[in-house]
Amino acid sequence: MTTETTMEHPNKKVSLADTTARIGRSASEFKRWGRKYPFVRYGLPLISLTVFGAVGLGHLLQGSKDVAKVKDEQEWEIIETRKALSRTGPVELYKPKKISLEDELKALQEKLDMNNYEYKKIPRPNESKASEN
Image 1 (cartoon, one colour):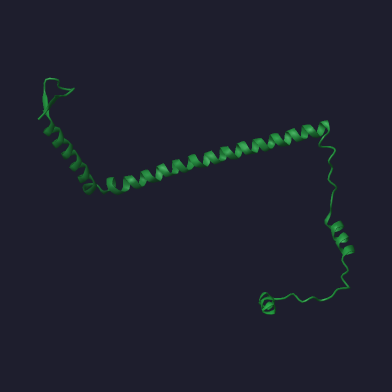
Image 2: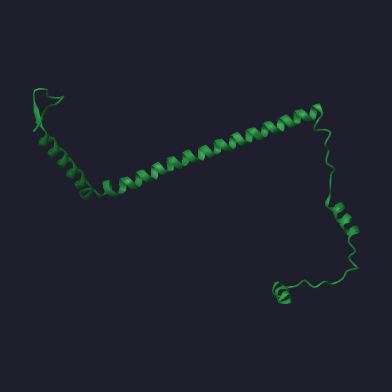
């Protein structure tokens, strides 16, 4: 059996069996807490899980907000550079024509004759297989 000197009492010798017994007693006392005080066994873990979960979710949400903020700043920079380019010239050369729905409708009506049409039968999926066999 080995003996050690403790830091608090340098002259006092402590055996290995004494420290093992002390650890065993403290472990059994800790287990007894769970039976004696149910809050320690059930309530404390539940509350700590809730609190740490809320803190963790807050941290994750803040991270996604930071990413969105950076993305918005990048889009803003792109818009600003495009405005700067439009002042100097290259973007001004491209001018898409303004298209209205009424103009598109008129163009389609001119292409399509609504009064002159013919009926065409669309084959059903099982009819096309039957005609091939």
